[in-house]
Length: 421
Ligand code: SAH
Ligand code: ZN
Ligand code: ZN
Ligand code: ZN
Ligand code: ZN
Image (cartoon, rainbow, N blue to C red; front, side, top):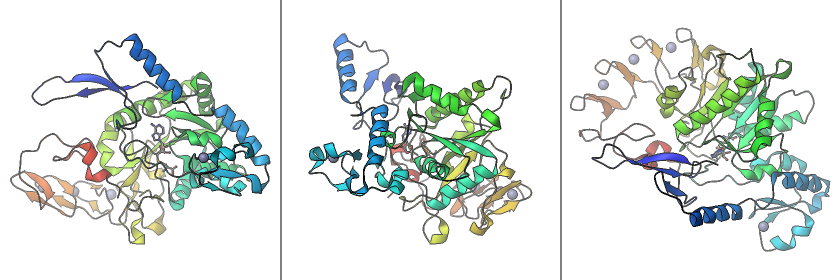
């Protein structure tokens, strides 16, 4: 899909030079597309790029994958193989070609219903880090949105939530439906075109063209009063601005499905993202607020619930729903603050001066009278810097802050908030 326009700023210069680069791949190793905005593109280069793109299409189309799946489920268990190297379901005629690859045998229907367990999580840090919800968090999200009365979920980059909904829907009496939008094309092997759209959330691109857009539009149309919610869990290295712009377009799609009903309303949304992005998200969505709930992940050693003795997850739910409606589990230590009218972490004390429950990370924060706000318990007020900060710091004039956490001294690529090992 379309590239994004970036700007290279060099020190001392007012204006930087603008260039286009891939929206999805933040690492030049994954996609080397680069184009100065003001550079003329020769016919040859254009042709070369088109040739490159043609050669880098997935081997099978979504349609072909759907047909292959139909054939696959007809096979007896003993003939159901999954190639781990190619991340592909194999039909018997293809075994030969993959004979020196590692594969799994006897793929059960249960396995086919949990592709996020079968596929290995993509681990490229910058581009496509896949962090899958722990069962507890996934179940919590699903119960929450059912209790809130939603019957349709637009799952944007949340394959595991989608999968949980799909597999329940195939059992009796479960009326919730989900449409998965994700850039990971491997999922097209397991879901039809009505269940999965190959989608890029950094530039709102539907790889399946107008037909896929129409699928999404139809899904967003609230027939028989079935309310829709968007749930999204983007890669944390992603640019908030690009994500916000795509989400606004999805919201507009929703608004346009209903001529009268949705005037000035915003599609209900859960945006799952680390708490240190709060101000960035609120810049783009002033109607959102951050919930204290800590979202846990399976394959992320750090992002697990505090109770298990691990470090606490920094990942939160941002939503445009009324905070008091988001009921957090008391058995996990959340309580309702009657002043703030929302559920908060047990360690999150209501500050009388700020008149709010101010902790972002679940620990008890302390109020600094000089800063006139609550700060992390490990911070102290530095009179040189004239603000609260870590004890260990050098009192230098802050240079341009990190894009991610806003702190000085490092670039976004090296932000300690994002480190995941
Ligand atoms: N916690 C979620 C997974 C979040 S990981 C769950 O368990 O369901 C981030 C997800 O976003 C992955 O599924 C990844 O494939 C997807 N993703 C990454 N970059 C994307 C992009 N540019 N467009 C759409 N989806 C993307
Ligand atoms: Zn193979
Ligand atoms: Zn409070
Ligand atoms: Zn305070
Ligand atoms: Zn202070």
